[in-house]
Amino acid sequence: RTNPLVLGIETSCDETGIGIVRGTTLLSNTIASSMDEHARYGGVVPEVAARAHLEEMVPAIHAAVAEAGIRLEEIDAIAVTSGPGLAGALMVGVGAAKSLAVALDVPIYAVNHLVGHVGADLLRGDGVTEDAPLEYPTIALLVSGGHTSLLLVRDLVSDVELLGETIDDAAGEAFDKVARVLGLPYPGGPQIDRVAATGDPNAIRFPRGLSHQKDVAKHRYDFSFSGLKTSVARWVEQKGDAGETVPINDVAASFREAVVDVLLTKAVAACTDLGVPRLLLGGGVIANARLRQVAQERTDAAGIALRIPPLSLCTDNGAMIAALGAQLIMAGHAPSSLDFGADSTLPV
Ligand code: KG4
Ligand code: ZN
Image (cartoon, rainbow, N blue to C red; front, side, top):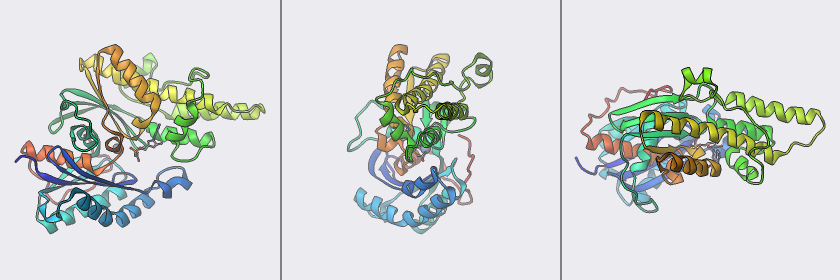
């Protein structure tokens, strides 16, 4: 069927995201974040996130429905993130989605969070740039506090391949941890971006994880950020031990450069190796000013078309999940049976 009205529920991390779409038209995108509650721990606390989802869920659904200007009874289907993500957090979303589907007597579609990030690029509506539609195949680089993945998307609803991912920390997590080392508040990404603006990105040569020839053979499209984080921590500690002041701006700029360099080197390599002249970015770290700049420079140089959805659709949200659900329906996929569960390690 064409242009189904779909409500999407996303609770894989700390954002309670409810989105409503009609086909590829964005009607509403409500996000309640428990970020503030995690700030004093310096990272997302799974139990705290799950409880917050439970509190935010019903108000967020009401807000999204009101914003979309529809009645709940008009919804044709529910889409929900069933993984990957934090198990307890996912369970709240899956439980709410099933309840709603049963109450409204509509089909439910369990979808993959990472594929949802790609679906974000399909949405059109107020405040969303009218680009040409997403073309396939495309490489997608998804970078957030919870994941760092490189996908080959031949078809959104039937053919998505994971090329590589982080083998330890996510890139956003590295930003958060390095910010902490530098005495900057959580979340660290925007703080690092801010202080790095006046720093020298070439002041310190921090390591680019899994970029040596011996690593590349086995981990060509994988990422590693924990060595980088340790390297920054050690560098800062040694300065402190020597009684010298730490040049925070230079450290932040050099760290940011290392992350951006390795992310784009690998993403562009995937495009070149596989002959795919399209790169889509997604995830909260896409807010990074230097990442966006270097992505533009390197894709221009390599003749790759770069796509970056609006930031409100790059960070975790329910609209991208609804968009993917709508695609599944329009492609004639059968709904999920109601016995699916949350799967924290769900493969693409
Ligand atoms: O996608 P997102 O909103 O959701 C979660 O992963 O929960 O991503 C949040 C992550 C955090 O780690 C945050 O520090 C990072 O994205 N981030 C950034 C920037 N803005 C947010 N990292 C680097 N530079 C930024 N400007
Ligand atoms: Zn995400």
